[in-house]
Image 1 (cartoon, rainbow, N blue to C red):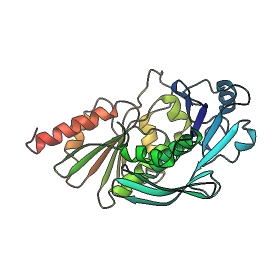
Image 2: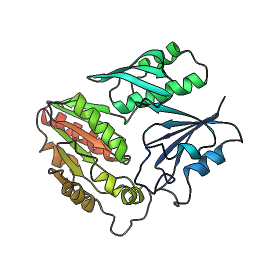
Image 3: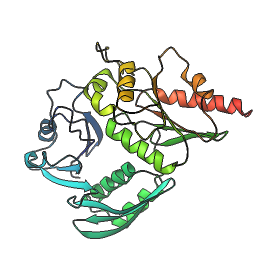
Image 4: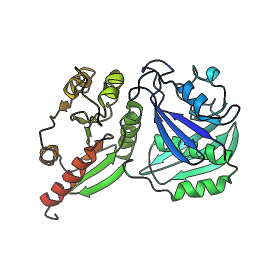
Length: 309
């Protein structure tokens, strides 16, 4: 089985092209997730990872095609790109998002492979499925078999997971914590619920990430109507002086999001929100920490409020 490394969430602003944000590494004996950048020493680069995980002259690098032009000349492995641009090896065309589903046509270097249907929404999920198609083709799997698998996969926990629909309020949870992921999730939310008020409860994840991607976070939430920023989830990291959730909320507001506020960690956020949400709202708990627990508690309180708890 070939070794395949997938690179996604490439950030232009975090330390140039070498110190990239998220790298998913898939090898023969399972899935290893490696993080380059704010969680590490800052000395590790993508190119070290590529060189270290594979034997000479083996392996394949699978790149999401956004922000990669500066990287390609330096990758000394066989590489394949996927995405929406005309230059991607695997390309998604004619993308149609309808409610909580998506469909498109997959192309490989201009050749029409056929239609793909996904029972989960979002442009980011289109990209994920296109990456799966690229891997499947590398493994010589039949395209129709790949598509059947994708159509049968109805999603995973903490990825735009609908937790509750009660009293006219929808509660959704998503693990997104990188600015690119956040933009993709909020775009999906806006497309699925265009006529409803979108309330986002965001928990920043790690002091190092918040510091490194601070500027990117300030413009990532425009497609929410209401934004509540909670305390940073440390994930065992020590605090960094000056890296604070209240400062992030203020910066987001200063960058044009007029309905942003910070809620300290000693406040019962679920109790606060159950008094604020109204019929028709869609509430999204967002982050890689324990913010999902707030969503579950809010759902419980909504059931109690409606007399069904």
